[in-house]
Length: 88
Image (cartoon, rainbow, N blue to C red):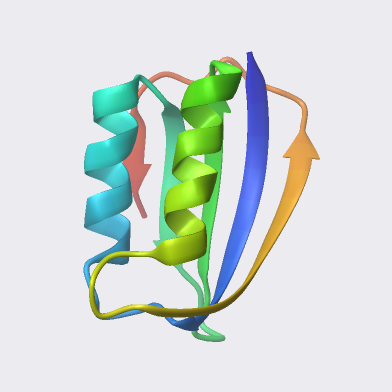
């Protein structure tokens, strides 16, 4: 079990980034959350099996169609034992 915090920079709001990430997280059994930040970034926390979390991080590097990802900051965090995935 691992946890990654991700901040996605670029044109990433208003392109269904959060909803697409939620669907992928649910498909792969990843817990956590995702939200739009006031500075125009998208922030997320992904928690679960390493391979599943890495798939979500890879998605963030590309984003959904319409997104223009400029940079992705990824940091490791201590898992919190979260259940489910929410859009904030």
